[in-house]
Image (cartoon, rainbow, N blue to C red; front, side, top):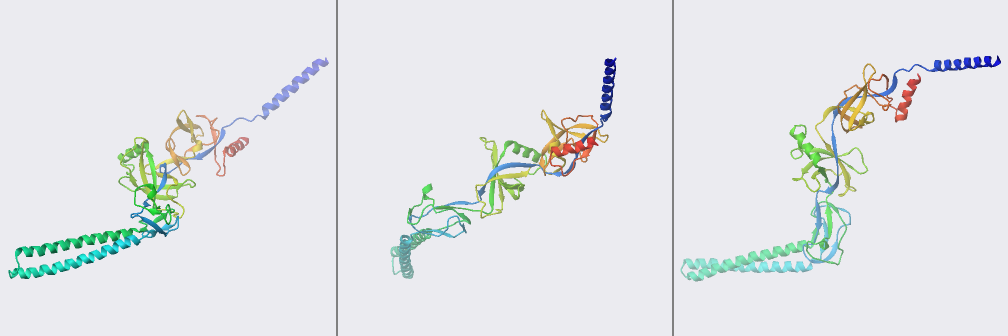
Length: 394
């Protein structure tokens, strides 16, 4: 009897516990999810390329006459102006040549003056038939010879003056000078070899940024130009934006002023050049690595959404949208590049759509959900999930 009563008691306790558990389970409602609103605005697709800064002008300073260097008039790495004196070659031999040529010219001019006087006298005498025709012709020939000798002496003097001028080597452009490759006391000679370079000067402002655009980008630009959606860089000045390796947001603006006349078949790229003002001539010099951004197409209106809400499966991109009846719809998207921190969506979304941003792994098309606007202060997935979880608790 005791065993029977104990068994009945255990059954009653089990039934009571089961009833309590059933009573504590709440009824399951729509799934709370965070949503973000789609906005539409005018966007601009950007294409980015890498390149290097190059000088607009670059000159190798070489001697044009031979001689020993007697002076160096610049500080290594300094900014110089066009016409500033850089090197002095010993001018004394060339000064002597110039003085000799100048004296020779004076002698030839004196002979020409004498020949002119004799020719004038011969003309008077010939008019009176006092001298023969052959004697007159001789005076005329003497004058012509003296005149040619003066011209030759003038050329020799000008050549000597030019050589004397070349003993002072000046900067042909404004820019920054390099160091002295050859120092005082060394013999220098004209020549094309690297051993004859005294120094170099490169311009610093404006400056070029040169990039190589790939073939696919060029073909895209050609197609857009044919469709009237983009102007050609060969016919118009297209803006370009430049940033250094440690910069962001492409703060420096220039224009594309040159596109090469052929595509390099070895690399599949074409060279383009951007000219821009040097924003820091004291430090920014040719050779720096840069990123360049240019407009890929004419600005157009498109939907913008956070990149995190877009899912990809087998190359197809899609997002989950909450319809007015709070059911989920899966939308296939055609996307573009990032613009102002958000992804461009060319088709699949429109202004005001509510796109699910959390629980994307469990959301399915047709499911009923409770949309919760994503808080502006949310900084990561954990925060957004906790918001949805708090809604579940309610």
